[in-house]
Amino acid sequence: MKKKTRKKTQPDRGDNLPGPDVHGLRELPGLQVDGYSLQLRDKDGFVGDQASQTAFRELLERWRKRRRRKGKDPLGLSHSRDLAKKELDRALQEKKASEATDLMHVAIEEFALELAQVIQRFMRQPSWKQVQRIVIGGGFPESDVGERAILQTGAILEEMGLHVQIARLSHDVDDGGLIGWVHLVPPAMLKGHDAILAVDIGGTNVRCGIVKTRHRKAPDFSLAKVVRREKWRHADEGPNRAGMVDHIAGMLEDMVRYSERKKIRLAPFVGIGCPGLIRPDGSIARGAQNLPGDWEGHAFHLPSQLWRRMPMMGSGPTLVLMHNDAVVQGLSELPFMREVRHWGVLTIGTGLGNASFTNRD
Image 1: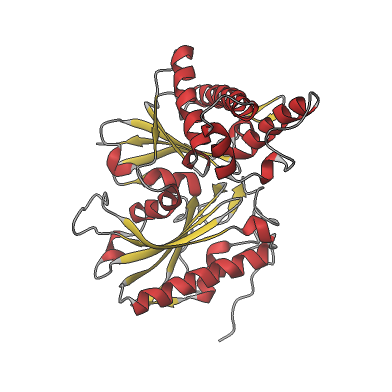
Image 2: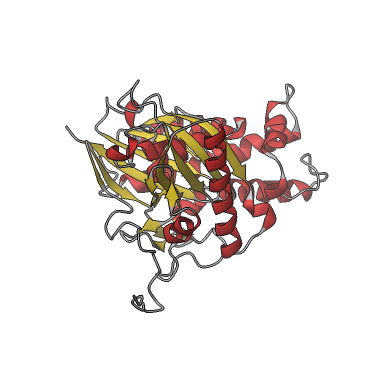
């Protein structure tokens, strides 16, 4: 039987991949995704770019340049983007006042003000107006520098008259973007299975893991746990798009082999969290500019490319779904957000991810 030819502009999704309108879901049982991947602009460009981890490094570098005009830079010769988080934390933690600690404090204060102003802009948007609590995720808050900046942001928001709670992720920052997928996997697929596979793609790192749902102990998934995780810092290697997809597929295959050795019953499911606005067909409409190559064309379809490497997994055909990474990270907090009706998440990493939610009765 001859295969039907497809137009070259359309992605080849494979024979057993889900049909349209299943990726990037907005309506979930008891929850609505009000908005995500908002891209607000001002005269300087995207508002969110002013409150990313990249922005903090650039801001710190500007302060260091001013210091160099007067003498030696207390943070050394390396550019701020190349300094490890531990180096910045050490400078902040010095017991005695020093030029290094002064530099860190002034950079943190300015960044906190920028972040507060970005949050203020978000809170004016229809999908954010009623938000009562904002969870901060991403790589930035996991450092002492990031923690200090988030605390100062909360104080500045109060001074602005914005009485919104600022909270941290309940999970390890590397786990939130994986655990959230337990709320998106079709419930029927969990019967007879212990765990799912999940991928969290960011502008600097890719995380891949096995998530035990533990849904029999806690039906609300509050006990879901990552039992194995691999983190690949792709920004250091600079792969092209094809190389990155191939590496992610290899990470998933390693997780399958590990599950087989440990007798973990994997559901035939893979969840992919990715920056940007996800179309219902699983392609990316916009917002993936921090990833290598063109990820935003209709002709590129990541779920189908990964599905081809593992079309069958465990007991049946594999289902590969994709959603926005900030949405997925936010969903990891769902069991702990029952006392508020409207809430949001900001992920501070290479860029600034965002999503807002409403709990429904």
